[in-house]
Length: 276
Image 1 (cartoon, helix red, strand yellow):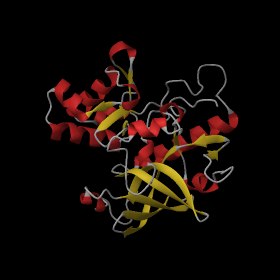
Image 2: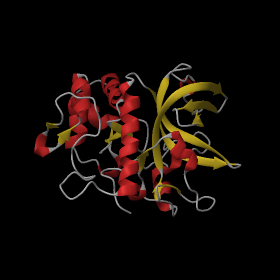
Image 3: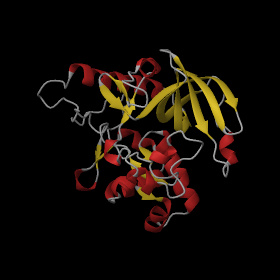
């Protein structure tokens, strides 16, 4: 399968949190998720989609990976407006509309973290969802790993442009041979700023990082410069290396998660950079 920049092989991983009974990649599930014949980290992908694309996704047979534009999808992300919130004892069911369609999103509640039962957003607000597409009794829903409120409405436009870009990549191919193809470093976002800033070793920092707090930039730079493998880096490693308090690192991580710059891997306190 042809790769769209970072989308073919991200290390989101965490097979155990696959929308199964409220358990998300904790309790030492990593080993079982890799050794049980399922997909490895290298098989994971993160695809930005519209709800219409989600609803129209092909399912070759029951239990198979869904496909969009002929390419398998595992992890997906989308942005939409909250139409309803239905709290249950074990999960939150949220109906989301992005202008192209509507779909239910289910977020399982950890029995040990009842604070997760509070959605953290209101009816009519916009949210970004990361998760997996599921089908049950011929009805589709998204099993959410992470749901974040959208604080800047420009993110809605960013996402639609991004989903369009990736759709065109898979349906029409790369943009010629002049270096403007999917591996080009030009940003498809429209947030302006000073473009991409060079980091250590020639690494590129997303322009969205320019508006982040100092701690968020430090956490990003640490993740960017420290090899963490597929698992990313845990909270304890970051606090020890940067000399920051746990609260400060968690706040910085939430800031980067909300911007879609990093993502959680094997648990809620282990992060890696989401490469575009």
